[in-house]
Structure formats: structure tokens, C-alpha cells
Length: 517
Image (cartoon, rainbow, N blue to C red; front, side, top):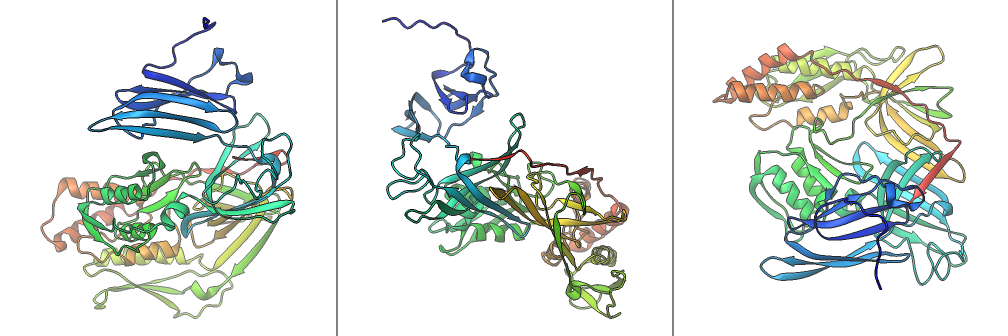
């Protein structure tokens, strides 16, 4: 028997090539190059005709080095299995198992996805219809039954939103199931889950890997994520050359250890993108999703709203002081009109010893500015807006044309048979590129180590430039001279701030379609 190839074309260069075709009319070529595994995916192919396929950039997907003898086999309705040989000091045979995504959109009853600014853990609840579907190969209810389950704890659920057939899908995150709830003869089943940070980092402990040598902080963070069994393409960490050693007890949680490490950095954070990648670094690290300002008209873009006014966190004055009270800088706060606050209600904020008067004045001015709008929190319900991120700015336009600006601190996307809508909470005391008052206080009150720089924390771009200038132009020999240089630079650069473009949210949901994988 002779195999005749009607059409051929070169799509990659490597050894042991193999190919997988996916149910979503796309495919991926795999091959070995320089001892590592590479994949080259295709764009979606209409009608499955690969003759005019568009091939995308190749990606290094290698879990090992010195790979050879790659072989893959497709299993109908399941995925693919295969193996390769690792030819290093000892030959090692590695088995590959890949399970195809299964589209569960037609069974969607309802779902809710929640994001909050105070935690990097996002959560979801999902309810699916659970009929017996004769068109599938599953014996019993399709989602969960007594024998099998597509929604077992640990299974991955991916949310994608599409409005209309021709529009691109918008990622809404990837979540790993914690718990499923199945009742015999029930028409629906429900599951709860969290994102990768919640599932892999919050739930795991350090165990025997709890002591970290004196090394760059980035290396320690990499080791923590590696020991948590995350793949190298699951996360990105900004390079940080500062060296520290850390020692924890074995029962320490991985996320808790990361949080403690981040607390000694100036403004580092951990965040998971909706594509499922964990990012760790400073706000200026380019891999963090860009925040925007969105404009909402109260009676057009918003169905309903709830307003909370609380003067518990509102003040008439602010005082920035050192512990010995050698410095005590006061600044008046302009409160909301009509809020009858006592004239001497004062917020006292302690800063590090060695802080100069210039820095204390700058911090007091910044605090007074932030306190002008503290005390008003609004929760809005409106059309489905999958593009919103916690940390985005919200510009709320009133009927009379007046506006109020705040920071989005919580988002709850809801989708299903009852409709598609988004609720979000706006904190009037927060602003884009400035954060909230509580975050700012954490920054300035945590700077207690000698050599730390105290400065208005919202000038993130300026701070980076300032640090570079100090490091390049002068290496101080004492804290006093170092502080004098920082103070001088803060004075000359205190007005440096970035511009932020505004965008108007205008998404309709008449043709909404949530794709669950």
C-alpha cells in the first residue's frame, strides 16, 4: 500500500515532527529542535481545510532538555497521549497526556465570577444543567453522574465571552474546581472554584522546602512557585537583585510566604491575569494588565446602584510624624460639602526615623489630597462588561453633567439564563495610578528599614527614574547624606505624573454568549 500526499508544505524545521488537530478547527505542529520541544499552532481554520492554514509563531513548550524520539497519538473524543525520551545522564522515558477541552456552553444555567482588589484570589460558582444527552458517549447525566464527572475537584474551567459570531472571545479567567454538588435526579449541578493563585498557592504549604539561602529575592520567589509544582509558563517574576534569606516553618502557606516577601519590597504585588498567568513585580512591570478609566452614565449604562456614606474614615486634618515627634507636619483636609465633621478630627500617620521635613510635608499634602473624597462607596449594576479590571478608574456622570471619580475595587460578573450583567463597586477614595488611601498608608508606614526611600507613592514612574539617578550619580556613605539627596530630588520632581487616557464603556449584551471550556 502506498500513501500518496496530495498537498505538502513546510511549516517548521525540527526532528521527530508530529501533529495534533483539535475539535475547534485548529491544529498544532510539534517537533524537537536543539533538544527542546517546540509547538507551532495554527489560527482557526474554516471547515477544517488546512491547505491555506495560517501558522502562528512557534513556542518553546519543552518541559525537559535533551529530548528525542517524540511520538503522539490522538484518542477520539478524549485528547492525545504520547511519549519522548530524555537523553541526559540517565535515559528517562516521559509519558504525555493531553485532554481536550469540552464545550459546556449549551448546558450553562448560571455562573458568577468575583474579583477583589484586596486579594489576588478570584472565585467562581457555576451551575450547569445535567441532562442525559444521547449524542454524547457519557453513560448517564452529562456533567456529573455516579460513575463519571467532567467537574471533579481539580478540573479546570475556562470562561470566555463572545458577543456575536464574528467577534473575538474575551478571556474571563481560568478556575480550578474545589467542590461539586450533585444530587440524583436533580436537573442541575453546581461547583465552586478558584483561580491558580487560590488553588495552587493558597492551598499548599512549604513542607520541607521552607528555608531559602541568601540570594536575590526573585530567585526565592521563583523557587517558591517551582516547589508549588507550577510550570515555567504559568508565571513571570520581575528581576530583583536585592539579596535576602528567608526561613519559615514547614506549615507556612506558599501564598502567605510570598506575601511576607512582598511586604519588604516598596510596592510589589502578585496578580493573576485573565489568561491564567501569575505576575509578580512592581506596578511599573510591563506584564501587568494596563488599567484604564471608564465613563458610565448613571441612567444609561447603569441599571441600579447602592450608595454607602460613612464618615468613619473621613478626617479634617492629617498629621505626619516621627516616633520621637521631632517632626510633626499638619495639613488641613477639604471634606465633602455638607459633611459636618469635627474640626480637630485628625488622622495621625507615623513614618520612619530619618524622614526629612520635606518628605513629611510631601506625604502630608498627598494624604490630605486623598482624604478629600474618602467615605463614599457605590455599588453599580449594569450591562455585562467583561473588560473591567479591579484597579480601573470609574468616571460616573450624573444627569446634571457633574462627575465623580473613584477606583473599582470589586467586580462580579453574572451570566446565564437570567441574563448577562456586571456589578462593580467604586471607592471614591481611590484613583487610577494612585490607588486607595489604605494602600498608600501601607507603603509609607512599612518603610522602616535604613536605606528606604520615603516619597509620595503615586509617582511610580518618577520613583523608578529617581532610584536610577541616585544609583548612577552618587553612592552615599551614610543614611543622612542619602536622605538629603532623596529629599532634594523629591522637591524637584514632586509634580511629575503620568497622563491617563479615558475610554467609554459601551458594550451591549443582546447577543451575549459565554463559552465554558
